[in-house]
Amino acid sequence: MDIHEYQAKELLAGFGVPVPRGSVAYSPDQAVYTATELGGWHWAVKAQVHSGARGKAGGIKLCKTYHEVDAAARELLGKRLVTVQTGPEGKPVQRVYVEVAEPFERELYLGIVLDRKAERVRVIASAEGGMEIEELAHTAPEKIMQVVVEPAVGLQAFQARQIAFGLGLNIKQVSRAVTAIMGAYRAFRDLDATMVEINPLVVTKDDRVLALDAKMSFDDNAMFRQRAVADMRDPSQEDPREVQAAEHNLNYVGLDGDIGCIINGAGLAMATMDTIKYAGGAPANFLDVGGGASPERVANSFRLVLSDKNVKAILVNIFAGINRCDWVAQGVVQACNDIDITVPLIVRLAGTNEEEGRRIIRDSGLPIISADSLTEAAQKAVDAARAHAAS
Image (cartoon, rainbow, N blue to C red):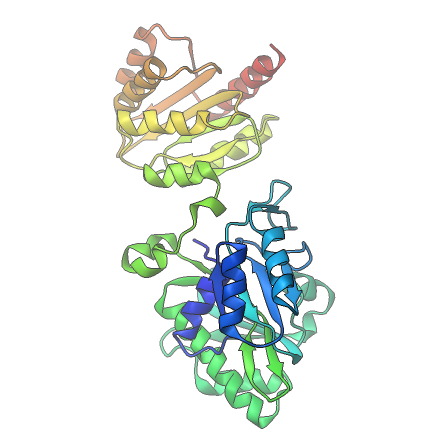
């Protein structure tokens, strides 16, 4: 789960990370009022979308007058901001963040991520802030510092000082950078985050260290104990299909292909998508119906898959253990009777109550294409999708 910049800064500030003064606005008038309340002579008006590289896409405006603040907010609010991370469809700007624009001397990078391979939290820092860390890792990897956190003791102050000195900061700046680094780590740990990125972390002329921009991502599975964070979710920034899937407790990820997939088990789902690709097709989604694939759950899965207008065929692949093939078959038949399914449907059932499930499909009289193996099911799905697209 991702949140907006202003939300990330609010959370980080609660853990002692210094951030510039700012406030969110939902209209041009509110943006101007916010600027007057903040005071000063320079402000940054920032589009709030779940994406990086906003500055390069024109999503950040530096303003010197209230008139410029008003014009910037009018230009940004209501538009779809397209960045290198959003894809060509962009993301809607429904709010802007008005922030005091303070002059600074240096831009640094600070990131805290979950390294799944090492099974550790990794702190990444660089004196080359303000640019994409992936680009820096490719062009100048020697400029990146990394510290692996021992989970039994967490990030230690001496490690934070090591990072700060490695960034080339002076004594006064080091103590303030340590405060920011330790605060960001505590926020990462206590809020069940999977990433905290401060880019840039800036050093001002009076030796302050501020988080000028911030991004945070969180573990969806931990949101039941992080209600304050969960309430920050903005569905407008997410794929509508994934929002709908979350409402039905379905594990769904939208893709760019034309073969809809309804599968039980993440491993089988990935294997099915690989087999579809091997057969020459492209999956339209990852959808794991989970262990309790009741008829209602299967029917909801069909509605979700069919909400993607690119789908030309649907492949249902169930290997029943906890599940039962007859339950799934009932759900498939119910979905076909309740929903107008205008694309070919391929069903492969194996495991618990397999024969009963196949009998339900066979006796339904519906134009369902059956398959005995995963390879056969994938090939039939690819062939059916091509025939449907050509018709």
